[in-house]
Length: 72
Image (tube, helix red, strand yellow):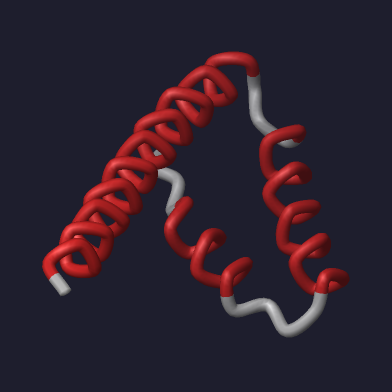
């Protein structure tokens, strides 16, 4: 099974309140708890991959903005 972490991430970013964000996080936790041990392993690997890609993307964006500010 492939998990759509980006969907949860975008929903969390766009949450209007902390309560809405907490509900989204709980939804993800509930999904995890419903999985078998093998599925949890796959979930964790996919989550680590997603987080690594997101952190890389954020770093690239930060470096780009930082570079542009230094040029001014």
